[in-house]
Length: 295
Ligand code: ADP
Image (cartoon, rainbow, N blue to C red; front, side):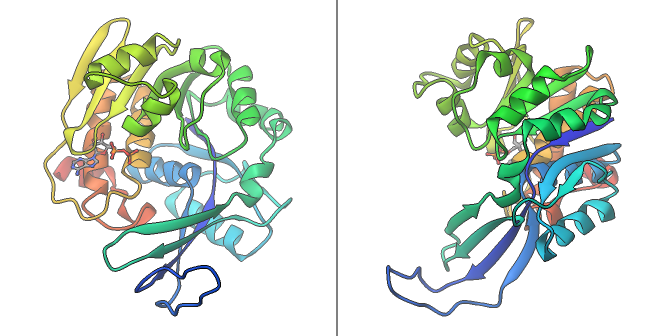
């Protein structure tokens, strides 16, 4: 089974002609509300592919929290680990201008209250997982607690987004650490020279057991002590890349849990990521296994 530990947000989206300056009011389009947050996205992406998936997260006791729980359940995610209350559900306030550029304000809300003791209390979920997948939209101490409570043999996958320098203890548990170029740069401490192969080598030197660098339309790069391999993506007409990284990570974690090699799992994940960019939205864009096979 796959356990995703992470964030759940309501994405509130309004189209605007232009952004308001300080003290100014502008009128926008009708409000659209989507379930989002990297943890919630990954859990839905995995469940839609057919993975047995549970989510450990925290939402508020409010309408946004209920929206998130509903979308998880509709996708088939086990929500026994979704805690309710403590703060309002996390929200991303997103304005989109006519050129498609976003401005986003995130209120972490309940995500910031997913505490180390919540992780300890979810011991049975952690112990029944073949793979645990986390991101960084929850407190870092809670990610550290996940790593400390992994059962022997449970594989840990981390997408450090939003990126920040990581403690050695977390880095050493990653198998793989999954990063895009921006995340790679921050984790590596700001310097990143040469090719993606060089970036992967620099990241491996920090201690993870393996590294995956995602490269958008170029696919991904997989690196471990056994060597480095490029994994191509599929050529598609990209409509909206939102959620592609979440779909990639979820698919990779699931396939690793099935016993596939890192290279094979990444190749499958690249197809899932490619499929996700052919539709708009995040959770709405995630494919079923049939759709991946038909790509
Ligand atoms: P992130 O969203 O985290 O920056 P990427 O943009 O690298 O991540 O996307 C994750 C994966 O999705 C890529 O490794 C690739 O397999 C797939 N993907 C993303 N964009 C495209 C695209 N335009 N065409 C084909 N595949 C894509």
